Structure formats: C-alpha cells, structure tokens
Amino acid sequence: MQAQKITGKYSPSLAVGLATTVITTAALIGGMHLSRSRYPSTDFSRPILGEKNQPSQTLFGHSSWIYTVAIAPDGETVASGSYDGSIKIWHLPSGGLTRTIDAHPDAIASLAISKDGETLVSGSWDDCIKIWNLRSGNLIRTINSHADDVKAVAIAPDGETIAAGTYSGIIKLWNSKTGEQIGQLKHTGAVKSVSISPDGKYLASGSRNGTIKVWQLDTGWELTMKGHKRAV
Image 1: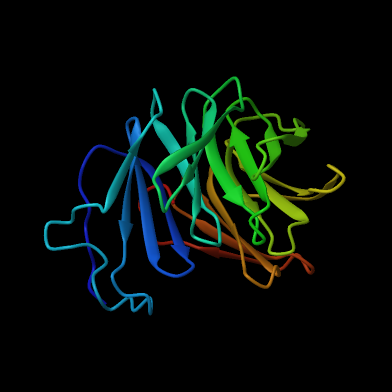
Image 2: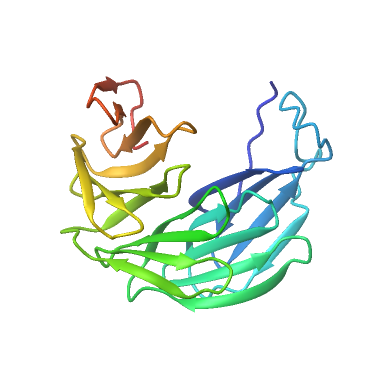
C-alpha cells in the first residue's frame, strides 16, 4: 500500500466514503478539499490523488474553522461542522451547498451519519448532542445530559444507539429513538474519537492520553491498547 501525505492548513478531520468511488475529505479553515479515486474498485494499493496531491474539488462556505466532516453512505452527501456552531450539507456530484443549519451555540466537534443516510448526529462544546433529519435538516431530538464538552459521536449500524465521548473521559450511550441513556463507559483521559464496529458489537475510543480502549458492548469486556505518544 502506498502512503500519501497531504499538507496544508488543516483542521483535524477526515472522512472516507466507500459508495462508488473513494472520497477523502479534509477540512481546513473555511473550506474542504475533496479527492475522488479514479479506481472504482477501491483498490487501496493505488494512490487516490495525483502526482501533485491536488484535490478534485474544493468547497468553501464556512466563515470559521471546520472541525468535523461526515460522508453519507451513498457518497453523494457530506456534512461539515464548524467552530461557529453551524452545519453545512453539501451535494458532492455538483459541489453545491444544500442547506445551512444553525445547530449549536458553540463549536461542533463531531458529526456522524447513520448507515441508512437518514440521520445526522452532532456533538458540540455546548455539552449536548443533537439528532437531525439529514434530508430535511429538521431537529429530531436534543440530548443535553453531558457535563462536559462532547468531543466525539458515533452511530451504531442499526441507527438506534449513539455513543458520545466527552472531555472528561465519559462515554455515554443513548437510544436515538427515545433519548434515554442506555449505558456509560469510562476512558482514562479526554475522549477524542469514538467508533462502533459494523456489527454493532464493539465500541472503540481514542483518548488525549494516547490510549485506545475497545469494549464489547453486551458483556462489558474491555481492552486497553497503548503505543501512541499523542492524542488519538
């Protein structure tokens, strides 16, 4: 596999869509770079970008830093969340802006889109997560029972479980349909990232202290992995 380094003034966010082509999205101040693979077979042994590492498309519209991006499973929609609390929904084939949502009063740290492409979840420094209808932009539910900044969110494949990781290291699990808390996990440091496995059985979190934890959700089995020198 050939590694590629993309340089520039980037905010820490990256998303990959695996619908018909590979799309990597990196956020920078005020805009996003989109790069499409010329190889629909998603052969990762081949470089996605050209020799000069030039993006195939750049989207501008945010007035502040972009902290997070998420690509819908169909590969045609991307959501971007900004320091100014706004979410922008983009149509990738045309590069057009579909809508802007005034989502949070504080910075949006993380976005996640459900497997069916219908639901968008946002996590913010305002200590809450919000659940949106991705197609209409309408707010479905607000969950504000977090005592600290929400740094990372993830949606299980069934669309019913949402994980939200916070600066305090607490990861709360929520039922997206009822808004009820259904579980809680604890990392040893501030949570920077969370992910749920495709089968919905495992949750992984990365921390500011460089550790990774993996939980088996139905049994509580836990694994800690060390090796990073900085935040994961």
